Length: 341
Image (tube, rainbow, N blue to C red; front, side, top):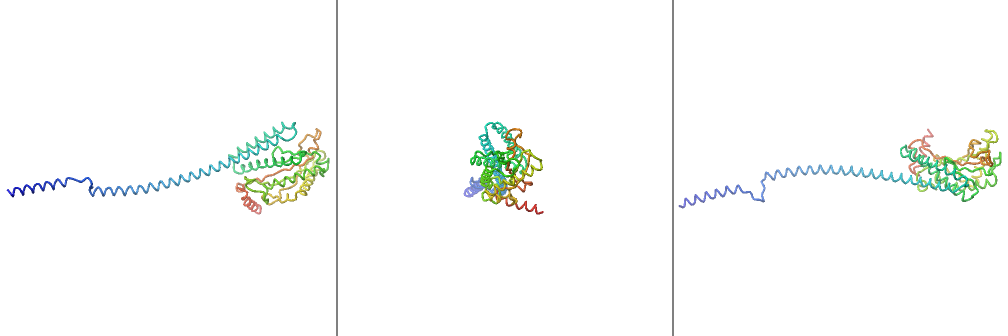
């Protein structure tokens, strides 16, 4: 009986041991599965590092694109502001011209200004697609038109009797004869002499922002870094006399006004262009550029006049374009080196 009981217990123990090997506790994992998990984690870690590198690269590319877009927006904003500045200058010129001169000339002035505004707008449209040189020249033309308008306004405030007009091409101030010169004379009348002195005073205060060597030039008054290359005091005559004689007479008239202006404002010779040359000079067109019909009363007197023509610096190469007022020194050295060769 004892042996039977012992044998039965032995069998039970064996069965318990067998069933125990078939049961896996919920909180235990076979080593094989643990090894597989570790391998998968290692693979995932490698992929994570790879993805991180890709994300970093994408972020850098995105940042670069954003920065590029910011630069483009700044450039578009700057160009928009320049166009607003140009439009304001044109409108100011229009308002000034419409309020000046005899009423019977109003219709003619309106037509001339409309044509000039259309021309400037066309230049602005072309400058959006043309090269930087064309764009710079357009800005120079618009800034010059605004300068002439300011000079004319100030001169008229000093003396309403001064007949000062702006040329159709917006590049010169025209002073109708109005007794400035007697027939065949190169000496200005006393009234004409006084008028030219006043004009010299205004010029001396206005052109400094567009000439080198003047402390008046700065980024505020000259944001486009445009510069005057020459200011020609042009002498004109009526049609009496031979062409050669009138050409000489016109030159003497220009020279006499040049002398009058310098006697009032000697520092006009201190205003230089980019190449360091004085901007003030004398020219003559004789009878070649009349502004009035000499068959009408006062026509010949009107043609015996002085024009003050402004010639702006026009770059030949893109590298000659000044990027700012401070960059004019680089352009001057560049032009000087090219001339020396």
